[in-house]
Length: 327
Ligand code: PBG
Image (cartoon, rainbow, N blue to C red; front, top):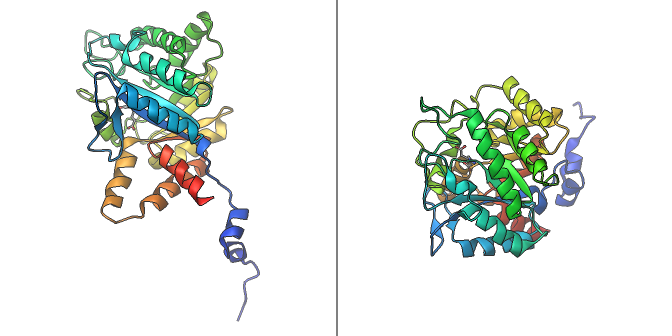
């Protein structure tokens, strides 16, 4: 009988020993809470494909932001849903539009206790649902869109955004937003760049969350699922353009990309556990097929282990509460 010389099990014997040797820990500050605020709502509206997530009223948003601050979350990411949409996404550039108004009111509520981040993209504001304006062929016009992003970034910074987060995957978006922010005196507002954003079916429920009217798909600007080298190029470009943080999105099906990005990035790396990832866990858990809390914490741990500094997740507040309770 040969006995093993190495016994890794020694360090797994008790919860306290396992805690001692844990290589990845979760902390409330690792989580960024994405929230939806909808113009003209009088009551929070549930989103059927995202159990437990709501479209906020302007008032209920402030309550959620206050809770996020109290929980010590890493940040809150605001998505605005306007009452009126048009081809140019005008409502997104309006300093008094729903998103910019909400940045202002959230900022007034949480002050510097919680970084307020804003989605910098036109898709919530365009009637065709694309992330930019269309040219005469119905394709998203990269450079015309850049001009709008530059203005949008300044308007969001002026409203008080602590971080702006361009998510439209237009070429050169980080550089033009950086230039515009600097020219307007906002050199201290960081850019969280959605750098490696894939054209993913996992965004399905998000379309309901923002009432998107999107016709067609986003494959002319978001990346194909099979591409790795291209993700690294996108990240390198964004770093060269001055991104202060880079993001990989979605998270769970792209952990290899996340790991590679973390390897080359000299700035913090975010990952977005998107709506479809959330919906899959919720539906399986609702059927009793998986242990909800255990699966959520396992996915968040795995995303951090793969290299994410922080994670955008609809579970942010709940996960933070679990971590507090379990201490
Ligand atoms: C675009 C944007 C999307 C998401 C975040 N920002 C939708 C898309 O690119 O199609 C998806 C987030 C999610 O699915 O949770 N502004």
